[in-house]
Image (tube, rainbow, N blue to C red; front, side, top):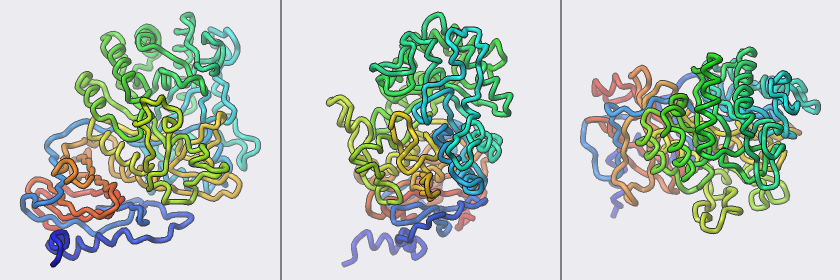
Length: 554
């Protein structure tokens, strides 16, 4: 006797049935084709080998949801306006790209920022040294006690790498190249630390701490930030937003860092950074507080900074990282922040697949994920907390699938208030560096700097499902999946209305190993969809055709 699943599939028709085999494995090419200038109506990426594969059009008919899994989208309930999706521009990324011939480098940048690529609309860079630098331990003014900042210079960002194929390529040229491909790119800049002479430990990091900003240099550092923004603007690079400090809770002094208390960050913003920005005509630069993990500290810092009207007046929103857990998006924290401070935006400012340099992920120094697609889809990755978190926190850091972590964080983060999502380094070498403290991490594209061989990883395609289909000005709308719980079979979805109101974007993700049959319901119209196991789907649906009740969405 045929199973109920088989009968349901027959009811959906041959067009939908063909989707079940859409995940047929295909050999991965060394240089996958660009995604193209046109936004396809329906694309799919899967563990079985699909890479932004164009799929048959959906066919909508009038009717109520049937039994089974249903994704219901309500475009009339509009939520936050999106700012964009993007990635990190670092000295390490510039170093890797400097090892490629200019045409090859251009093709990679086109993949991220060009009209035929992922169309990134946001980026993040570091102010001074960070762990993703070659040698670190530098700032834009390393002359001790230069409180007047007479020696300030962004020359380190213009300094290339003598051993590279293109020895003049550097961080600032990388940022300019990204802007040349997308002049509207919103760049967020974050300092990892003030110059060492401004800090109580007189050092960049070490001995278990990053040090704190000396009281007499709070205003000095605020003026340092002003000079950075002015210098970049003079180079034709407008900085869209800044965070006062990357990870103010600290990192145990493992690399460049500087620590603030919640009250200290409040006072720094209220009494120094905010007023200096206003004084120098920089009030239009978005000031993003916190810029650290989604944990209790996010609530504590937000209460201190956003709960103070004088400090909050300078602040656009809250920046959040994801390193406090690998198995939760912490949606309850996002909901709390959104409800408590409804006028302040939530922005994911950093996340990546970290700690890939361990013997577990890189035995003998060879990263398991290099040219190995299965590693990215399987529960193969381990983060810092898997090894080094306190015992009581270890359950929040199990092994995980990199693809799953990215897709779920984007989907649920958008559903719970994020106006944007910024990945970390866009490009790294095949080990996950260079990194001057061996804090190796994965990137969407990885390159062998000796041979020039490139690996466009599955993470690139996951990000592109969002960055190509969701653009600044789009409005996230209400979406729900039913039934909830185990019967939903793990399907996740988000949706947004394009800024022009003419197209509805829906993105769905199936983390399970088996295909799921679901109904996409928009008003009184419904369409059957089959999503293969471990697959991501993006749809661009014409609202005009939906309003007319057209059977086939074009």
